[in-house]
Image 1 (cartoon, rainbow, N blue to C red):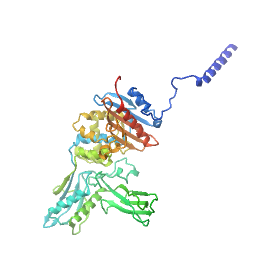
Image 2 (tube, one colour):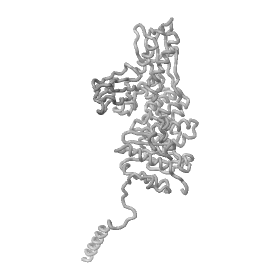
Image 3 (cartoon, one colour):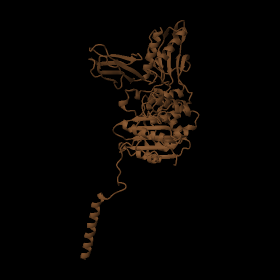
Length: 512
């Protein structure tokens, strides 16, 4: 049987020769394709089909190891034009606000307003109010110190100069759970993780409720410590000034952070003479007390004082209490501007609790998220493929597929509140802060500038962009881009998102 051995040896020799020759054979396509570098507009064939353009961009090497979901629809018909991992559940980051805003407009209405009330269970005798004074919050995240000054002026006009009773803060409109269930411990001291209360206060017209602005400014000598200012003025927080003034030209290195579980804010580092001010928005611990402190200072400034054994405390307002004065907030359609343009996390959580209170008579995350879930399923989102954990998108456990998010954006177009919804979205390249919002420094050239209208989203390892755009030949499109599990530069990932959105803006469907 020697011929069998010869045949076997011959076959092995032939196989060896073929293997060694493979590297020298000309191949039309490599067996394994290495992800490409960024594809510039000049390198892209403008006449290529849309799916080829998008797939080429998504071959970017910086997306290796990520899970990237992309969904593109026609805005006029809802036709799905392109998808990559469109049905994979991904973390939306602040694209969660698209769901919260739609639910708020649908359930509360675009003209809905939050109320804040000043009440008493006593009676006025001359210039003295005999009884308790209640500051009752109903969720308004836009209350400013000037509103408390106006309340004090209103009481003064009514002849009240002294109050023989307690000053009581009522935050019972919502539950007493201050932080959403998945908020990271490390986010809690900052404005992005501010506590939620039905009675709260914002330091300025960005309306970051439950925060103060702490500012360190330089002295004119390289001795001692930097000047520290708190806005609005309040005794509710304590400042530890560990800063050091240094000579002009030396580096400015200032850190401003609240100690966990307290209202002690530590400011430390070096401030050079003539150095620029360093400013930070710092969340407060238990914002109800913060609001009460600023209100009491406003009363004092108007000459209204408390007498007797008065104390500041928290309790529910009696049902038969008399209303002395009140304020209505801006309507929801206007609140959506700072909420969506500036991606204000606190507004997302307040709206969530408010929906729970109004619809299910419980101002909690559980009830509010139930309302959001019910609404968005009516707009085409599959309730069996989503997980909702908060109203802002700060949770790393929120999940929704890109196709479902795009479907929501398609279906809400028929609602009478859609104009307010779309107006609230950031607009690419528009420098005005409350127009361009988080997209004001992105896609600053036409045709994407002023055209791409979309919500951004960002968490560690997560970047998202979803919204609306019109193609070069006038076709309205909806897109959702969700990148999860990336490492490295967030700017690079945003660049890929911008390239995808710009490609949609420059595309023509002629011949397709």
